[in-house]
Amino acid sequence: MKAAILEQITDLTKNKQPLKMVELPEPVIGEREILVKVSACGVCHTELDEIEGRTPPPKLPVILGHQAVGIVAGRGKLANRFAPGDRVGIGWINSACGHCPSCLSGNENLCGDFKATGRDVPGGYAEFLAIAEDFAFSIPEIFSDAQAAPLLCAGAIGYRSLRLANPVDGQRLGLTGFGASAHLVLKMVRYRYPRTEIFVFARSKDEQRFARELGAVWAGDTSEESPRKLHAVIDTTPVWKPVMEALKNLEPAGRLIINAIRKEETDKNLLLQLDYGRHLWMEKEIKSVANVARRDIREFLDLAAQMPVIPEVEEYPLEEANRALAELKEGKIRGAKVLKIS
Image (cartoon, rainbow, N blue to C red):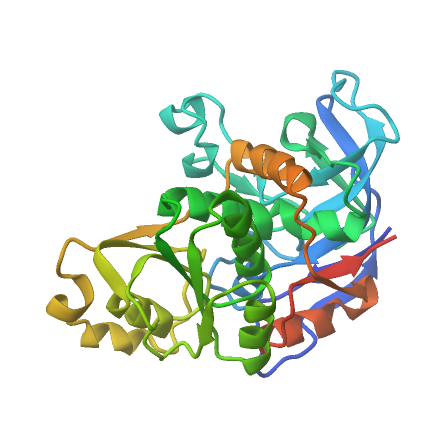
């Protein structure tokens, strides 16, 4: 099978070709696993974190990719949830222990034995992947393969972020960074909380314009102050400056949700400028988002089909995965990037 593999940790500003195209044997499936013939796989900022070593794979080489959609091409002798030919999706959550307090409460994302697709096990930048059937998800018919791919991570993690933000209809919500996840959050908010005003902070004028097209009442640069204080802000950026700026824009008792698996070190020194009175005083809260649970993916796919929420996607052949990653690193984003595999 064709696959794009990461062989070593590297700096994407210096190395624009981190992945190598190779031919590999098809995966061998276990008795409770299914073999998926992958047709599309979303490109996520977490892949940049893996490539650059902020959340490094435990061993190399590895096949990246955790927003995979495809057809069941085979199944183990004890796997019976899906039939051959069924369309399924695979997200970041690949497995968890199933018996710790986090797993038993439905928060497998917090399990100490959490395994991630495309980091701890081979992912979707390949023609085939294997997955335990309990960690695969049916894809609603309304979505094409390319449209469904970003729903599995960008959408699901955005859904979890919004749930942790605990919005009330009519309050004001900020979105810092406006890539794949944030543009889906905006669509969700407009559907579920129609009286909520959305303020978007983004470096790119194109992203600001895109946010206004989708219904943001205001869009400005990350460093700008919002015209009105916000009850909650969801940060989807890879750096620290937007966190500092967002804290300034919160109402008393406001909540900042940080949706990033890791933050880059480039501007970490800004944290030394944290001013308790300006940034944290008045019972402001900061909460991180860690991975996704299966519940998040299931519930979001149902919600996305009901709305419906159709993500904006840019498609690339698998052979151009490096170009898609480079553009993501450079901030050339409109919606979500998706690789067409087969």
